Picture (cartoon, rainbow, N blue to C red):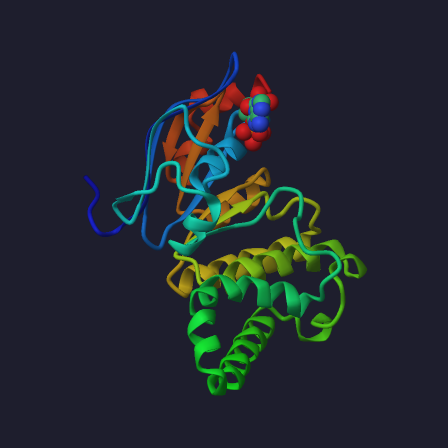
Length: 255
Ligand code: ADP
């Protein structure tokens, strides 16, 4: 029973791969406007949890709800239509397309449904196309990508590529943004910029769940942290409390 302020609810989710239990009876809920950290040793199930929430995996058991509505087993594109966007631990940009084109593809998720209407009214296409381009330019400017908008991702520094992936996800106008290790491979200055970007995303009303190994970033950025170990939630609370939880300390020492 979710109140309206709850964006994501995971209830009793178990995910098995043959004999291996990757997630065991995970329950968590993320209120609107929160920046939630998901931390835990390697192999504790963090990415599997993202894959279940974003529809890439079906849970073996349990439910996923978005804004109070059951979305368990929906395909990734259906979840994106319902407002879930994500990035990947290993970047998944379209390498042969420019930064602008990558952003345009993100925008397309909000617009594809209208294309048939525009085909029926060809006189409106120019306006449609101008609107799309204007939205792309807004996002490119918002993420400071003007200088590199015409470049292909592989020609750009890694930190910029990561920013392009977040920009593409934000082009989808999500209500829930899932970031899988966004600081991996970034230098200190880039991590600071990332923190500002994530705060501004939250400031625009988007709820953020972030898997992150950089504990400094987790402590400074997240309102609330969920700790996984061996597929279970072992702690859940404000970052300063979770950091000193004996179970958490033990899980990391055992990593
Ligand atoms: P984390 O993101 O915390 O490092 P993962 O969610 O990637 O952990 O993995 C949790 C466990 O599930 C690991 O033992 C991993 O090998 C296993 N796992 C993840 N995805 C698959 C898959 N598609 N097939 C089989 N095992 C998987």
